[in-house]
Length: 305
Ligand code: NDP
Ligand code: OXD
Image 1 (cartoon, rainbow, N blue to C red):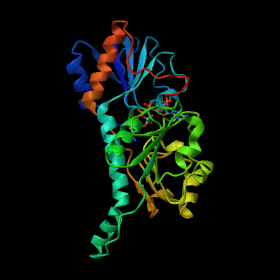
Image 2: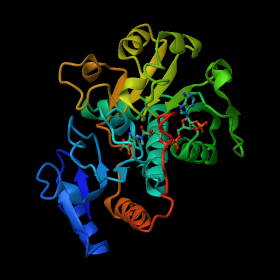
Image 3: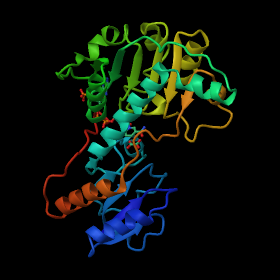
Image 4: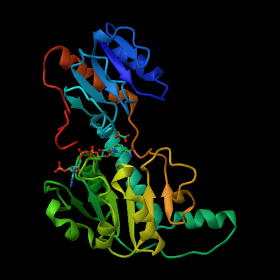
């Protein structure tokens, strides 16, 4: 019995050491150099390349190395086994702080002052008005962001497939999108990437938002239709976009977002998986699998998250 890591293009030394520490009697294999494919019963995957999950016919579960499972569910020929994901308070804390930081930085015009400092300019301006934030998605990350923003004095709304009931937050269900976004000064996307959410933030969506809205996408790049966003930025309907995720990552050097004065780019880093807590969760589920106990954080493959 072994665990296989299919996590390309990363140094896995720390992760492997953690696994070996927590499960000293279990073999850890690393794709693509798998010595005994038939022994693999549990796969930990992140953006698995084409064909990389195929040879392991004794695999009983696949665990995502992150909160999102889109790259696993999109895999062609995915084995019919449970798929789990990471649910971690550290991710929620990092994500909430990222969102709060960027909203405050925009409100207080930090980018302008960084530029002024380089030119030794002294031009104070009042902070921007606008206190309403709508978060698309009210799951683990969306609800944590809503809470932190509320604690910092924002008027917060969430919109989700099933309507929530969160203290101090205006909650909207899927048939109330216009009500949820029409007055928002900031729209934060924390939806999963699914068939329903592909290009969900498109021309029609942006037309429902108010002029001068700031869009923050920290979920997945393909939820935003990038040409519609560029168009909305060009007419100042969207005043600014803060983007941590993109349709193609790394963002190609030729992409129009790079040079855009009203786009802030970060390299998919708003909430990075923490190897320590993630490994504990992955090992817990491995032990559960070995003991035929129910797995934690299993995703609904029909819903796609
Ligand atoms: P959850 O699964 O906990 O929450 C997803 C939320 O989205 C739920 O409220 C769900 O509704 C809602 N939702 C799903 N589909 C729809 C839809 N079609 N219409 C309306 N609402 C919908 O996910 P997390 O909060 O843990 O994470 C969200 C996403 O953030 C991840 O899928 C991942 O892609 C991304 N992420 C990005 C990171 C980064 O570094 N940039 C780091 C970690 C995650 P309901 O409550 O009714 O089910
Ligand atoms: C995740 C991510 O889904 O890092 O965890 O994007």
